[in-house]
Image (cartoon, rainbow, N blue to C red; front, side, top):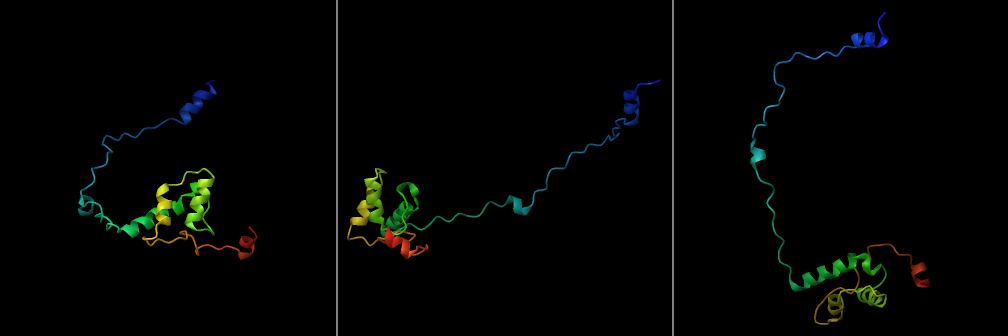
Length: 123
């Protein structure tokens, strides 16, 4: 009598295809869209001095390192960050205290978020 394992091997015999041809894919054909370069990057226009300063102040508003900015002016936020020892950039204070340059004193988020007036009056 034969072993059950040998019967199993005979029953489930591995069969390989006798394929003599190569199954490699041909190289992709070069098409006109593949030869084209990516989209041309147009450099942004140079910012004037006021736009550059507003950009710096927007970056300050977006940086959560100096705490939340909802419901307070940029200068109040800068002073609070200084009192808390968070070392806000000195350039921000200079920009906000300069009178000959027109910059917004309120943060980027002023008027864009919902604040409950009942809770802000109590704090």
